[in-house]
Length: 300
Image 1 (tube, rainbow, N blue to C red):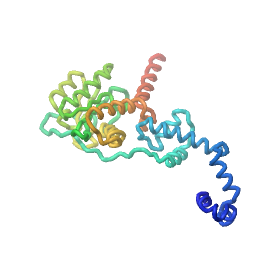
Image 2: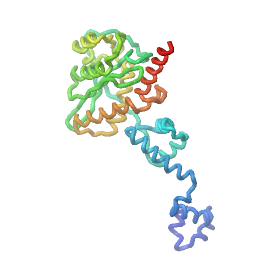
Image 3: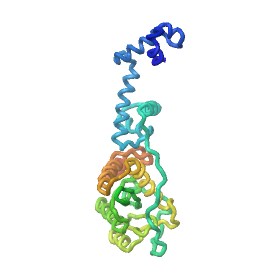
Image 4: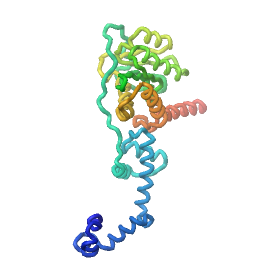
């Protein structure tokens, strides 16, 4: 109505138009005065403008992937008390939203002839402590120079990515390099660590299985051969594809994919809040575990 009055007031005048419309002339003049002098606007308007800046900051700092729930959770983690419905309203006004996960394509090729370790997980992806169960998987990224591939090793307890690599080749070296990084990152692991993967040939190769044995890891491979046999690894890769690869493509080359993957993994491990962990990042979740363990040890 304000815009309509502005459009026709020179011809008909404000008061006659207001007499025909469900708005008083005083309301119209107050609205125009607030447009010219923002200090006259109500406190809620000023708070909304401040909240919009904070919402946009949180959304931008987190790879522009967070939806309403995660933005709301992160704001409250930063002691910015705000209702979820307010975050939803302001994100709609800003025109921003979270990413939606799509369907994942599989890249590992089952090797039905290779000797396969037992399935020691049986789709129960739970762990009571760090370095109890790792899961590993691969995915692909389409670039202007052809496909590149990414391999990940994930600690089930905290969902932390402990090893990753990007390569132009889908050979065993890719999976093996990601494993080597994980072994280096978690040098303080004990001898009861299970490494679980699907039935891909990269994970059933002699070099890979020998390296697992040499490092003291107990190999486990899904027995059925569907996506549920390695569901947690596929979930993390699904986040990677949705939050980075599909959102920022098309990709020019391996170097760009590798650099942005490095940034995404750092953000994922240290700052991305995870609902299964109580809306804290993987690193914080592990720190809380070790702090509790140290406290119990000191009490004993």
